[in-house]
Image 1 (cartoon, helix red, strand yellow):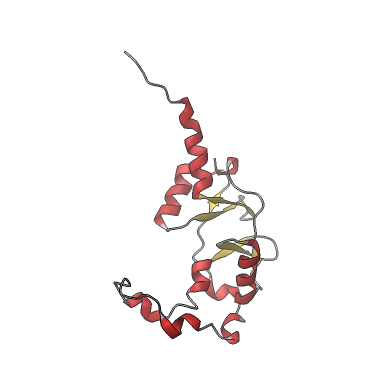
Image 2 (cartoon, rainbow, N blue to C red):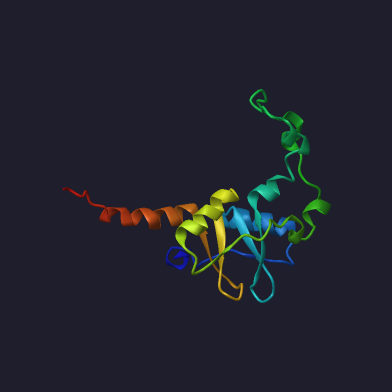
Length: 155
């Protein structure tokens, strides 16, 4: 079960926070995902480092199939979002709500992560309270740790 391998010390952010405060919290705590919670600590969404970096990368980049010819993006590399952009509520950049219950199976959670291209997944209790976060590595280590019990069967 997920509750057997999830991290309990979760860095989260309130839904009232700004985009800038989310960015600064990611920098300070060196995380790539922030669960966003309401006043009752119920999960309302997540914001990822990719969401924030999308404010830096020009939209045109998504239309270019082959970026190999670019050594750099020149003047674009020095642009920053405006104060107005980063002062918006963090809820404007929320990812769709994808999570697992603390009693979920490991392979179910891992499959969700693969399907939605996630490295980390918030974990909630039955009442949607944020209780942990689990990574692909957490799940992989838990699954692989049982491999030491694999034995060759001889006939």
